[in-house]
Image: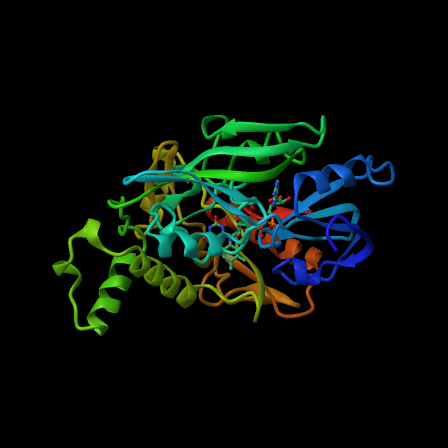
Amino acid sequence: MSGVVVDRKPLKELNTFRVNVFAKYFTEIYSKYELLDVLKNPEYKDLPKLIIGEGSNILFTKNFKGLVVKLSNNFIDEAYIDDKSVTLRVGAGLSWDELVKHCVIKGYGGIENLSDIPGTVGAAPVQNIGAYGAELNDVVSYVEYLDLDDLEVHEISRKKCKFGYRNSIFKNELKGRAVILNVELDLTRGKHDIKLDYGNLRDRLAKIYEGEGKSIDDIKEDEIPLHDIRRAVIEERRSKLPSYSELGNGGSFFKNPVVSVEQYNEMKQKFPNLPGYEVEEGIKIPAGWIIEQCGWKGRKMGNCGVHDKQALVLVNYGFATGLEIKELSDIIMDDVKRKLGIQIEPEINII
Ligand SMILES: Cc1cc2nc3c(=O)[nH]c(=O)nc-3n(C[C@H](O)[C@H](O)[C@H](O)COP(=O)(O)OP(=O)(O)OC[C@H]3O[C@@H](n4cnc5c(N)ncnc54)[C@H](O)[C@@H]3O)c2cc1C
């Protein structure tokens, strides 16, 4: 059905919150030529457009009265390879975790800590996906996109992507304008930069090895196989996050706020257990801790609620509308501001 535009497309299966909304028009695209054909069609040219991957970072609060474009170009090209490195050019429509799996099998290092993150390769630069001490920013070299304003294809380097914490040029200057077509990644071969010091990753891996009668201390850190790290990440994530196929959700709903060192020290007097870790801009505080502190963990409001294992995750118990979920998030943000004086903000794209 590539390049074909359909009317009134239900989006329930195309967003992980499983919110029941419709797109006025919808098309699935496998190449930039198909994309250009649709975009140049006078019928759709002037309509609002929304690019969608797997809908795992979108909360729809209403029907979309324009054209929703789903990218499904899913190639992996090896642009360069030597003993120490490999450069991959990957189509935006490929599932991100399929790419991670492929790389781990081939022994390409750099994205194993980003295992099991839902979504597509094309969406990954938008919020600079990150987990367990790794970010897309660590490995991207170029992003190719089509600009909806001039319908020209542009290629920009990592530096020009202006990556930050869950942020990039695609959420700012190029918001709503760039259709990411493919992403180029520089990965390692042979020796990898193994990252285990985030969350419970090291403990999780130690337990896995224990179960196999081995000790993590007997293995040199840079010799830990990539697939063991992937396994530890997946087990760790699945022990904490609800599966969206069972309970609609969009992963972390809020960003972790960053406060100044002074504000952090002030708060620490009031909350001696306040967690926080240093980042360039100040101290980052886990939003999940904050929300839990305000009493929201496990609370329900109508058809939606805050997950009982991870307060950062808002869930749809089956029939919630996007507006109900947004309303819950607004109430939580106000409550946190009132009780702790911290302004948290959504990580999710609210449409
Ligand atoms: C259970 C769960 C766990 C998660 N864990 C993590 C995590 O650990 N770390 C993390 O960073 N994120 C996490 N997320 C969020 C989500 O997986 C990522 O943001 C992912 O990159 C979204 O991919 P997607 O294809 O679903 O994008 P969508 O949700 O479809 O779109 C997200 C945004 O990107 C835009 N977009 C999508 N594709 C393109 C494209 N080709 N060109 C231009 N714009 C595009 C959309 O318009 C929208 O603004 C999690 C989500 C869930 C549901």
